[in-house]
Length: 175
Image 1 (spheres, rainbow, N blue to C red):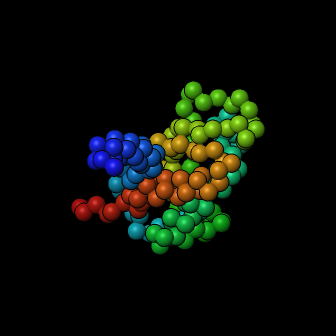
Image 2 (image 1 turned 90 degrees about the horizontal axis):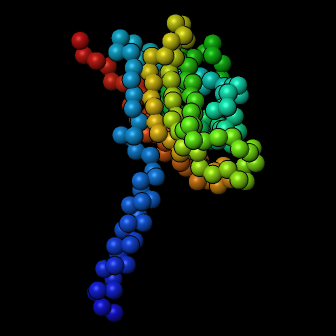
Image 3 (image 1 turned 45 degrees about the vertical axis):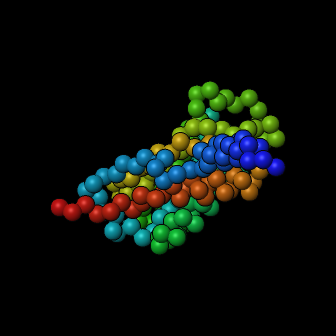
């Protein structure tokens, strides 16, 4: 076989590989903002807040997707040395998240077999339990995979959450 045959095949494979990599979350994809006067050194216990089903946006996220994201958040927080607690009274900070789908996404059916990947913004807020204000926020352009491919959806959730929490807690600012 000649080298001239392998060059186009190699080029096609490279394009496919690079296209697949574009779908993976990266730490630079998450944008964060936080209260620079807040002392994050006292944050050791996190309570993940329940998702309420009171808007079209929250109805578009399946129970499986919610479980995947909550499990990914729990694992990533624990890997960072934080304890995830079930009661708000035990928490040093609350974590609330929401997914806001793009405007073009509509609820046409609740049949999960016909749902495809939904794109939108994923917001993760860390809320002080005393003043009930957001002290840290990450925004992330997310693509929630079809929940019928549970392993791929769970893997994407883990990667996305790792990118989102890559900058939490923020480093203390020297004064």
